[in-house]
Length: 226
Image 1: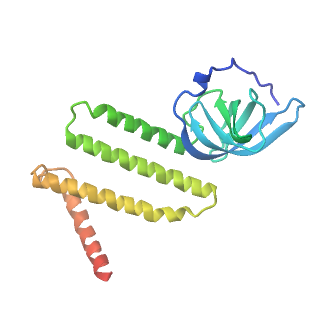
Image 2: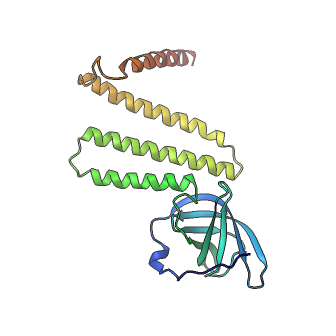
Image 3: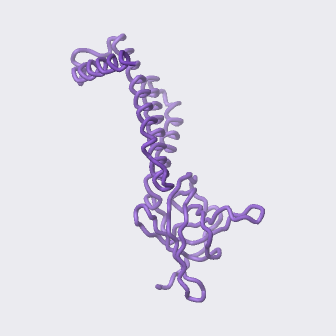
């Protein structure tokens, strides 16, 4: 195994740069003991950011040791260093590691979605005091809410696959969210029509009319049958 070179130890502040986000990412850890023996252990990342994360693993090297971590979903491998063992009442709660090269992508799509959702919420807070038209702010807030719900669905889908639960049980929740969003948009368009902000020349109005007609007929048949 190639020699692992340890860079200067980071400060405690450096170790925890950025918020950690809860995820479930299956990983494989590989390291070399002082005796030269190679250890391979499966683990799960539970809290992560672009600098590192907290792993749930039964066997682990000592603090300061380096490991190769492989994301079992993507196959991507990164070098890491063990920076702390989190314990409570003698029980190991997790192994804190840092990526030797920070990465936005190593932990996968769930981390990226959660990070993006948090950034959008921060942006909403920033523009709320910027004198933006209330309708634009409402649309932005609704869009952020939709992204957050969709990000949750993606995370749940992957986590149910990892834990061997049926991800198809998520579909009714996704459909319910789609209907909620459609009703919300419908009310907004009704308001625009009432205020004469939608005209015959508004792009897409013909396609909207056709879609609403088809939807109205199908919904009428559904409610009549029930």
